[in-house]
Length: 319
Image (cartoon, rainbow, N blue to C red; front, side, top):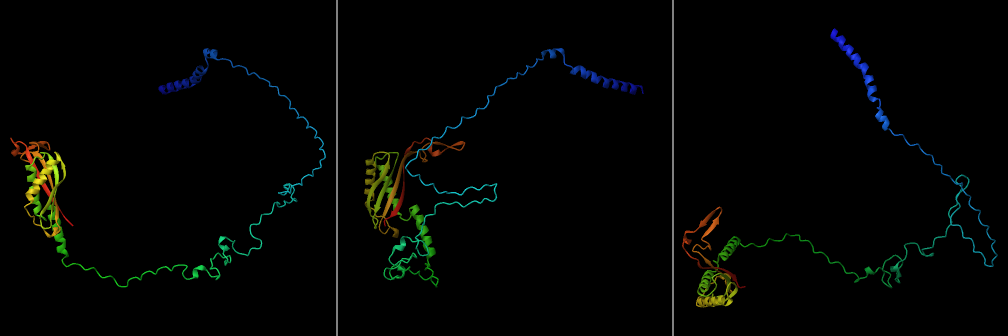
C-alpha cells in the first residue's frame, strides 16, 4: 500500500510540472527578441488622375453646290429590313435579289439536255446513233458490227488414253543404265584407250611438271580419229601442249575405236590431264595432320617426289 501511495504522489507531481516546463521552454529568450527586426512602414503614394476631356464638336458640313449632272438612281435593296425582335407584330420580308439566269432553252422539249451526239441529221434527241436516211439504229444494219465467234461445243465423250508401250519398264531401265555407263565412261569403251594415249603423249613431251590441260579428240561414225587439239592449258608454254596433242594424234592414227549405236554420227571425247609432283602415295607431303595427331604413308619414307600424270575422259555424241 505504501508503494502505491508513493507512485500516485509522484505521478501527480509529474502532471503538475508539465505546464510549468512547457511555459519555460516556449517563452522566447531575450537574445531572440533582440535579433527581431522591426518591419518597415507601408508608404501610401497618391497618383493624380486627370479628368476625362470631351471630344471637340464636329466641323460644320459645307453646303453642297448644285450640279447639272443627274444623281444616279438608288440601288435596289438586296435584303429585307431586319425586324425588331422586341416587336412581335413586325414581319420579316423575304430577300429580294436578281433573278437566276436561264440555263435551258425556253422552248426545249422535255427530256435530257442535248449533247454532241444529237447533231446527227436523223437524231431525235435520244442519244441513239441512227443510219442516215433510214432512221434505224446503226447497229441493226448487217456488216456494221461483227458477230462474236461461237464457242466450240463441249466434248460429250471422254478422250481416249494415250497408248503406252508394253516395254516401258525396259525402256526406263535401259535409259538409267545408259546414263550410268555414260557417267563411268562405259558407253564408249574406246574412250579409255584414247585417254591413255593422251597421258602417254604428255609424259613423253616437255610439258610442265605442274599444270592442267584439256584435249578434244573427234571420232567418226566408224571409230576413226579425225583430229586432236588442245582446248585449254595452264602452266608452261602453249607449244609444249600442242606437241603433246600431235604425239597423241600420231599414236591413235592407226587405231579404230569401236562405236556403239548411241554414237551413230560420231563422238567427241574430252580428256582432262593434270600433272603434279607427288610422292609414291600420291600426296605432296610425307606427313599430314589428321585430327589431333599426324598421319604418314610407309611408302613415302625415304622416297622423293616424282611426276604424276592423271587423266579422265568424258564423251558427247554428235547429233
